[in-house]
Image (cartoon, rainbow, N blue to C red; front, side):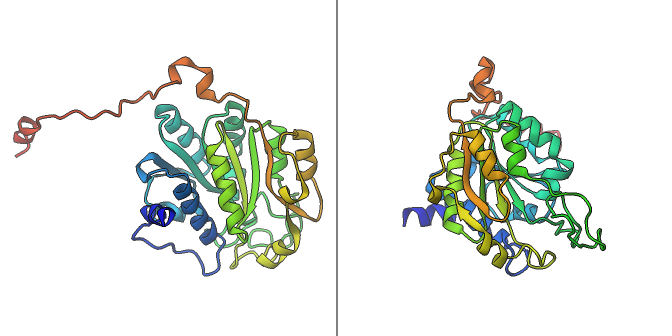
Length: 287
């Protein structure tokens, strides 16, 4: 009951406008469940959103929110965390937003290891603009922008993050809600830059990467006894063909965060203490 009441704190009066069956519904639910289980009050959470279907979540979670420019959600989140380290800062973006225009910001955030959590809704398509191929669309995928099939190879975000030496790398699937909640909790609790790529089926525009195809392909790393402290083994798992492992690929809990490296960032740069002010004189100037 305690978790239920805390979950309700994150409920908004606005409902999402995603297509029925969209994988974003499960991600939205998992995020609220994760925050409730961590007992983080809404006023201590900042959600930064990129442009895309994932950004539709901006009005449907009761927390601080900032809707950034296309591909620019990560630097906004980094700036917010450096200014106010007391906030739990999360980024919700898509594969087109984050792995396309925002790819450089992704790599630089990994290098800095700033203490934010990056949740990528990966549906391998630009859904908001009604069905163009994205950086994670597999070779040959036919879409409105590639009617003869895409000629580029798909980006592997897990392998990329591991090669860039990210301190927390995980992958989830919208069809496995409980596992997704656990991954989000682990990511938020991690000190440093935590990255969770999430398979999010687009039921309207991507008829290739469906719930059924993912259920046939995904398997749990934890069930296979994977040790997330071995980066080379994690990279080998990320490069597997055919089957799709989900779970925590790699975590370096000993690596210091960006804030820990700089003494002046060990406390918030902004003053959050409120002071009473008499506004009567100011108001008289406008009345």
